[in-house]
Image (cartoon, rainbow, N blue to C red; front, side, top):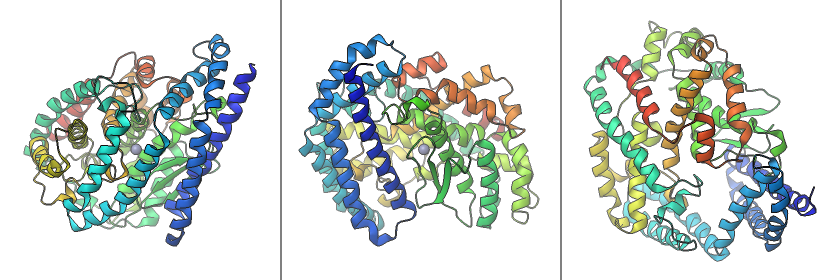
Length: 500
Ligand code: ZN
């Protein structure tokens, strides 16, 4: 082994250790920590992030990358060594382009903007949040200016979440998706009475929810020796090692949403759990992109967890758990209800079809914000107009409109699109899976997930960040990013449920 490569992996191992320690602190912050611990925790996380940044941006690391590259490349493109140097080189080159003062200013501005956004949302007062957003947009433009010009400025922001993806490519995919979804959803709205979901609101004792969820997750592959599930306010998945996967959920006494959100978070968790063990303590031990990550959560939540075979198998369990609430409802009725499509105001409550339009709206507005065509003051009006155009929804107040998400207040611009890309990718992967495991839905109908999980591990999870998302996409599905499988899936499912 080359000495430079050895030194490089030692340094990267320490950086990854620190990052994973920070992940435990984040997880604790959102699940266990008493509220008054927030001040101390912010200092701890701030210090860790500064140390990680300093260690990673160290010019010595850049030199080691140069020195290790020829030897690593000799090991072959697909080798751990060549992949590690390739991926870290890209991360490093991006990081050192951005002056530490700008990164610090972004973090500081976001830290001030986040609580203001919360207040503004409560008061439904855009003007309160607007100056903070203006500053964040300005800082994001300065961030863009740190790099060589791309086709579009927004490319640099998208790249932080979806490496190598161009705005124009996403736009093409989203335009096709929008053109397919807007009329499909309008047809569904006309036939809204075809689905009764009234029984999904009511009394669902939390202990019984936990029993059902525990059984489903165990069948999926959740084991107590490598996984945890805890309560939080906004569910997320976190990992501090391939065998330390932490899912979170929020149980509500009057809704079954936790069951679906736990399946969703399981998809994120199994991606992190299934990486090549040789990647542990390297920056390769993560998902290829946020879009790919979301493809995994959406797959377990929707393609598996909202399928008819799934509920043919699990409905008896859930009916027994909530016998009075689900009295008179059969498996088919339950399947239809959990697949109801209804345009609504709030993204995180949206169904699998309308969700994509919530994202496309944000993707379009963000580009206009960055190019300067849309002033921060005019965002609510533009938002409301698009909600009406795409979903036929009238936005009554800005709290449930342009102020509903936390992302912009955190300075995250470019993030949203990865949610809908995840849906697109999940359907493309599913098309491939259905070819290679023709009886996948029969297996799901028996509560068997081993072959599916193994297929995902072999074709996707084990590769971690080794390949760029586009490259990975072609390797796994043999095709480019394409919205047609998602549109076909939704047309098929909703066409049948709503009799279109
Ligand atoms: Zn997710």
